[in-house]
Image 1 (tube, rainbow over the protein chains, first blue to last red):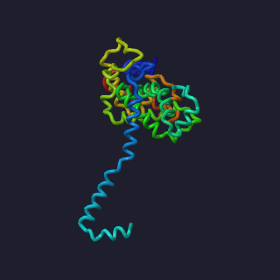
Image 2 (cartoon, chains in turn green, orange):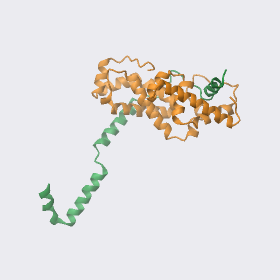
Image 3 (cartoon, each protein chain N blue to C red):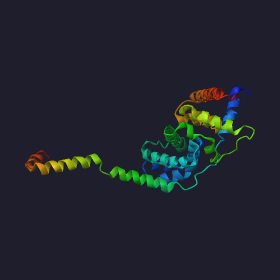
Image 4 (spheres, one colour):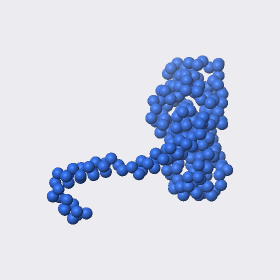
Length: 75
Length: 185
């Protein structure tokens, strides 16, 4: 047995191989569906930056109402 | 999944590509166990393997429009699973992820040889955990799990020759580390 074979043997003894038919202890499909739902919800959510921009615009318009016609003109 | 064979008809693969949820569930039911087993072999942590299986199938669903139905689903899923597992390992501290305590909780095919002292096994596992991730993944799949080099190469996105080289380098570095600790394999 050469050096590499001995180190392989030692490695196998230190980290025994996982059994061939290992399977999860629970059905993972519900967790996958929850993950997909969370992903879909986050895609439809309005980013915080958009809300901040809208809030800033509202404050600006409330502070300077005379600018409203100018905004409407450029929309 | 090792050979990429599947009992799922081709029409299911086409429907999956179009985003059909029922087709995705059929593929999940077919491939859940092999994907979980493959991830478990890499991360060696049952709870993490379950979470990463969910993560993998989420990534698979997200990439459904990039799947090519003329190719088998298994190797594609395994490649995505490998990336998810390596991402997880990258986020872990190497010293804690491959301890013998953790190995003891795995559904193992065999137990450690009582002839080899527990201390040596523990030091070997820790030394292995200190190897670079790319070498560790190739070595654990090739040496410990005895997976075909072709499958490992496809999962890691490298050539078979590169897998052999990584295994060779991993074994050399491991031996050097152990020798520095006074263990001569």
